[in-house]
Image (tube, rainbow, N blue to C red; front, top):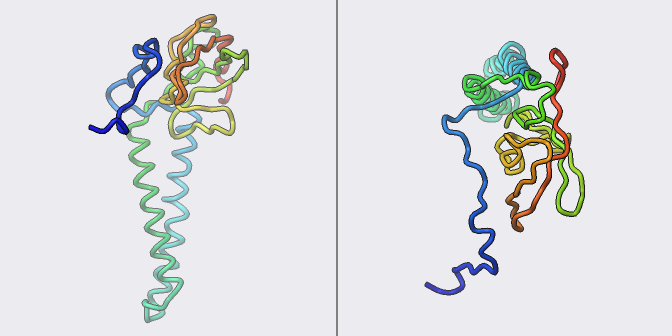
Length: 187
């Protein structure tokens, strides 16, 4: 084997640090608000969007030659897109495990739904909220529960110093604060 394809490391101290394993079973953890958004989109597609497109395709098909009929061709394409999204949402909703983060309100341990403030080695503070795969928005400071930083933070407590595995190496982070939404408050 060529040396070009081998990897040499300078330090042996990072060899034992790995990301925590993903839980088995393929669960799709999601907050009640996230589940409601997915279900609302699913219902909108089934009840409103799809019937409108079906009506347009039916009208376009009745006009005759379908090979050069833009309304028919675009309508069929849009119908396939809608059906694909409906199938995707149906599967995601079937395996969804709705978890209410407000049950941990007042806790200092990190679980699903927590808003966590942590500091890195340079002292830079970051705040993230750990949410489901289908609802996390990185622009809003939200990460999915399967993201490396979330998997590292899960089950830790305020004051814990953790080793975060990043693409550039291992970095130490300290958990500064943990918050959960109050019971009954929207996420």
